[in-house]
Image (cartoon, rainbow, N blue to C red):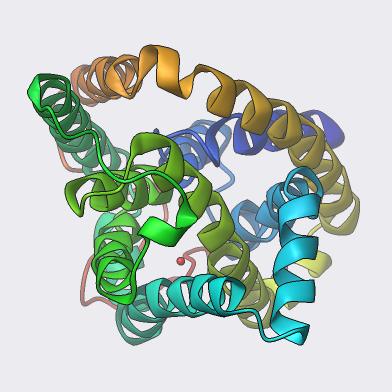
Amino acid sequence: MNWHNAVLLGILEGLTEFLPVSSTGHLILLGDYLGANGEAGKTLDVVMQLGAVLAVVVYFRARLGALLRGLIAREPEQIALAKAVMIAFVPAAVFGLAFHKKIEDALFAPAPVAAALIVGGVVMIGVEVWRKRSANQGEEGLAAVTPKRAAGIGFAQCLSLWPGASRSMTTIVGAQLGGVSTAAAADFSFLLAIPTLGAATVYKLLKGGRALLAMPGGASSLVISMVVSFVVALIVIAAFLRNLKRFGLLPFGVYRIALGVIVLVTLGGTMAPIKGAAAPGAPASSSSAAP
């Protein structure tokens, strides 16, 4: 790992974390190309998300401040929002802890990522077409995310554990299908990212932090990639929310399908695992790794 690769990974993380195109899927594809697919490389992919999380905190600082003040003052609206975020957070946290290793052994490879990109793209286009034809565009505002809808969003987020599916895509589409407007769905997805990505970062750092820091250039690569991902993500958040109402999710669906097809064609349609990764059910090698 060198600083050039760290910058490249940080840019890719910042660009894709909050777009419905799967940052994990993109990082797996790039990591496979760079050969950074061992324990240290995969830990870096996850831990650098902290930069993107901080970008959300900075961008939504006014809303988060109002939420914190509202919780202290016991305001019903802010308490309801905090409960909704926690309800939506729990399913993926539980499912991820229970099946993370099996998911990584089976799905952290270019071909499964490509398949998820294509399927997710088809779903996004289908939902976008359905919504354009529907008279009901969903309820506006974060108050629309009731506990029942939050639970639905949380279970939808579980699908994002398949790299290539996208946490942003599954939560936004899950909220849309539950009757929430696209703008409110995106806002809630960003807020949900804070506990989800934060927990994933802490978990992965505890599991693979030693391998990352022991890697030559590991510590500096982590700092560089986090700073770069923070700056890029901050720009992307503003641009995404600004253009979401104008373009919807359709362009991202088309991009996902195109990228997935290119990857499958490049691989020759095979489901070969990442170089050095253990096959499902087989003992992990020293170079394989573990929201």
